[in-house]
Image 1 (cartoon, rainbow, N blue to C red):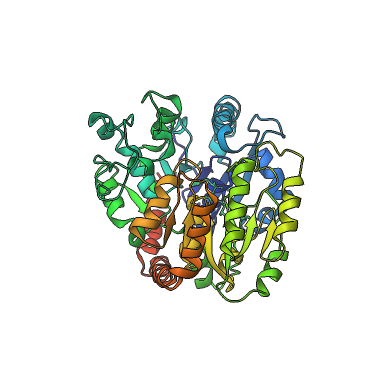
Image 2: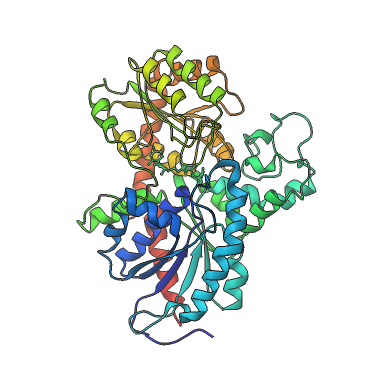
Length: 478
Ligand code: UDX
């Protein structure tokens, strides 16, 4: 039974993200947007991430200015030294299901769904990739909103799973460059190799593939971190299957736009699990305009030593300046041993700077940065687009393989070097982006940035959709 107390209280949104940085940040931005409309928000976070936020950021203080906002930390069930990255993703998912979800359910029931004198019982649950959510929501008659933190193209490729199966396009047989026919709206450019990496299986009953499809094809209301100018036609396809969609992205710009409008402090509330090395900004200040390629593969990519060395040779041979983020835990087999990094640092001094974690949005906004060599994580892709920065895409897994195809073939603001790791290919791509085709890419990227920023300003499609989302949630109050 839903509680009807506190009719005069604002909506109360319960947000539960998958506990990795790429999910945490857009969900925090969403929470911030709700706070700006005076909604109450309870935000579930893993205690591991909570501790690291306390250690490396002011996120907790920043949200303290909103009395209606509350963090609730729950254990993720993993030991502190678990890498929580790369191929270990399934261990995180299993642990959440085994440890976090039962505690979450208990807390919800025990605390009467977090209602009280000053807060109404939760109005709706917003989650991204939690398989327990649909059943839990149904059982408790709790409206569910799925936040798709990846691209719409990524989601659409999951909704098309039955069609891909029926047409026997999966499992793949033969050429990876063959065009895929069963993902409507993308027939002209989507190759097998561009489908999300979990489609690369021999058996379509593969539990990882099945798990992703189950978690990300929820037909209740969906929020997309995208906009009309980026993925309008794809969202139109999804609308045929999911009638209630709110495309409110890029959400990191939507929040800035709304804060500016309120003349509030626009310094973004951004989660970080590592300390940002600000010295790279000073280094960038000393470089010529658009001369530096920024290199970063996000928060969970793992690389072998061989791959790191191929990139290092490729970058050095390109003769371009570079700023490269190498997380200390990102090189496989390098645990606790910084020798590779030290050697790279020493021999790259003249042209490049290596840091362990950078203030990425500040870096991308810096006038010295002219390109981004990225793993095509959706947040990085959006941050690159909104700063008008052309990309070289080296996708690692999941949605990144499809995001990179959008960059190179649909928006034409960069190059895609997926499924290769070769110093010559890297060198040529860097030269192409930073020298040979520099003006062409910069012009297109700048134009795209303008369109996308317009979509999150008053009157723009994402801005209007955000208003609709707020109204929709208000309408859920009974
Ligand atoms: C993952 C997936 O890869 C992504 O595609 C999915 O949609 C969400 O989860 P991640 O691999 O970490 O996330 O990549 P990305 O989505 O790009 O997020 C990385 C975030 O870390 C970005 O917001 C970026 O600004 C930030 N970052 C990265 C820094 O702040 N500093 C750095 O040095 C590197």
